[in-house]
Amino acid sequence: MWGTIGLAARSLFAAGLTPLEAAVWRAAAAFALLFVFALATNRPALRVARRDLPLFAAYGAISVAGYMTVYFAAIRATTVATAAVLLYTAPAWVVILARLFLSERMTPMKYAAVALACAGCALVVGVFGPDTMRVTPAGLAAGLGAGLTYALYSIFGKTALRRYSPLTTVIYALGFGALCLLVFAGGLPRIPAGGVAPLLYLIAGPTTAAYLLYITGLQWVEVGRASIIATIEPLVAAIGGALILHEPFGLSQWVGTVFVIGGVIVVGGERLLGVNDYDVRG
Image 1 (cartoon, rainbow, N blue to C red):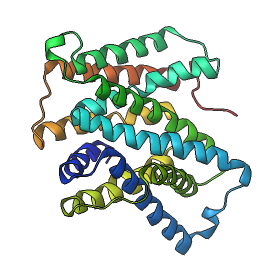
Image 2: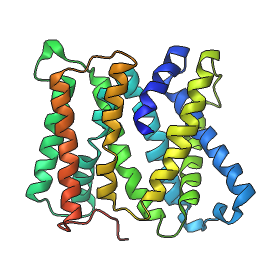
Image 3: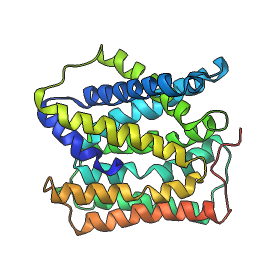
């Protein structure tokens, strides 16, 4: 589902919505749907301890509001495939953040993962040939920012799942994220006529359903393994962008994609082998 975000986003941008406006509707509508669902079927899911509100506020501000905005900006500034590949620098961000803030040691496999991710991104954006550069500095910054905020999504989610259900976690993350976006946007923007259908799909599929499925999976699946499974996203995005939107995606970009996914697999493989643990233990 996440691999089709770019296809819906392109339709929204063509209809006249900005990345911020698309993010506002995506977060706010998904939150409203889940809130009404919980209100009707599972009211206890709406209860959280006051001490945990800062966690959900940070979760929503960084990994919902921040992520949605910069990822949409990357899609608009580059291609669907390039934005998705840059997004999957997330495991490299996890390695770096864990070293800086969690005092986790760097290992040869981690260095290899970061190197693969960086080399892959370089190939995707075309930095080895300035005349063929496919990404503007703003697009590159937005794509890498999406990877950073996406990396924090699993960490926040894994922490929240220690005390709350997937439904509660997603509702409060989306709620705080929507609140941040509404403040920045100054309210709900108008939806152009041509944007209704892609927006409905974006809200129902790659947001409401996908967030619930992913956060539910984290109950039983390690973050490292989940990140490996999720690498289908840039492949779906690349194929969809090429077949449906006729976006260029040449040999060097395919090689770069393989490098980025290789970096994810190296990081996840180390996690699965028990060499290191990326979960936040508290």
